[in-house]
Length: 610
Image (spheres, rainbow, N blue to C red):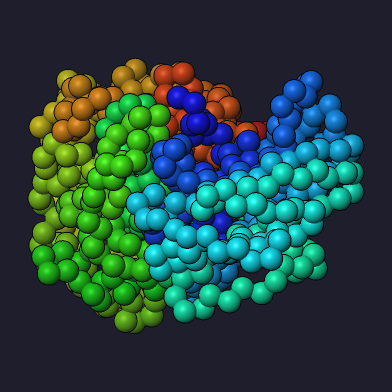
């Protein structure tokens, strides 16, 4: 397993159009450009030999008491890796200046700023890009002593060095080694350029300083909009920044995660591409940000969603479950056989065949996010939404693949019905509140029919619990959302018995499984870890049920699974290691919701509380 750090052993940087992962040893082992869903330049996290990387680190070989620590500059996306050795202490600050333009950019700049703060430290540097997921060759063009250009298909990567850094060719790659004394600095700047604009201005100390200050000022300014003042401010802020970093600024489309191919089980086949916009994940992300006070994100997503509704689909469905970040509905899945996979977890997939699945719950998540925003986009926006609900009134009662995108066949999933109820409930509320034209009699009739169907067929008298779908007694952690969406009171006896059943069957020391694939086959081999989204939904459900001591303990334990800079992947394995794509928007939006709900309930329970 040499060459593969732990999934959690990373921080993320980005410019709101692309993102990179930096391991705690100073290696950029994942970067796709010019967009989140573009082919990779660096992908050594998926193949340590063929994937490509950029490493900048102190050479601490032979040093006594050597240590490496990584942290974010507080309330920013500037990632600092500190190298502490017997000879000195140095830092590498990695960042990308945010680009909030509505126009996609073919140019993206990643800055690696180095300084020594005590003593003296030697550094090593290597840049070995591998274009198009490692499938395409490149050529190296040397400039002066401080620059080089890697020329690949359709994209060039410019490398510029400032300070006492002498670049040397190593085949078609670049290496360097240099030493800094206390107070000295150096910088490596990587600029990816696609299209016709290939000219890159020279790097200057003032330019790097200005870029750093602009990056820091952006994040501080953005966070000032947050209304959260609760007990877990650092973690909530970090989760909010993570959701923002995973949002494509030109369209306002949030992606599910920054990576592809990272396994839910080491050596297994559950290795998916999450660099796309799931309607569900995006709606929940936007809802979480709205709850904190970030309204611009809601406006951008509403525009993106309205465009998808106007485009429609040849199948007649108003929406498909996911899109590329520019709204393109084509996500052809391919297997990258040449990549070894993270710790030999294969196949490595690019694209996602689940885009063709039917998942009816997405309409409820969309309605809930729009209702939270309190503004649906004017009369045109309302008419599009009302047309959607009129269509759903005719088509809701169908089996589908469900929230977990199982590949074992369609079922009448209770969660899908739950969110159908939410769609009509929120539509009725918005029409009434804003006096909008709507077929309220029909919408209310369908809403009530869905409610009765869930109670009649989604409730198991034997289990005394709501179940995954109508043909099983298997439990499903997605139903932990029932109280939040208002379908049932969080202290209703039927809900409390469901919560008890989930606690007994799906919870392992505060960690929650989505469902039991052995009892409910999902069409895939192997197993998976506990699902972080569900673990935070469990905390929220406990809090709303008044089980505050249990909820707070479960929440605090969940926070111990965060990595060293506060990030979460999709799942937690048996040893406590993070699994799946990283960082995962689902997890961070659920962390925010759990923190807010737990704060509210704790405040009410305290003497003199609200």
